[in-house]
Length: 90
Image (cartoon, rainbow, N blue to C red; front, side, top):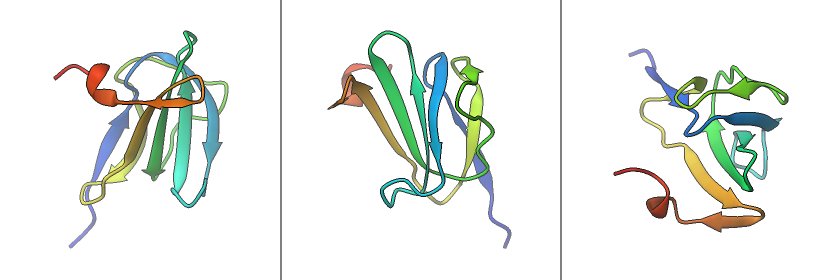
């Protein structure tokens, strides 16, 4: 049975500041700077379609993830990881 994939989308608009194929054993990782002290981190990606310097819009696809795999997602304020519950709409 072929692997199905799904889009991984930017949670907010910003600029891609980091992309690495195997960052800290988290797999392919992308970091987006939202230019207000916040950054979002997406890890465990495949088929990344953005690179550092790219501007991304909220909701735009930045990569793919296998439908049976979970990606890692973080919201960071400066260097401090935040609880996404307080930032993402329900």
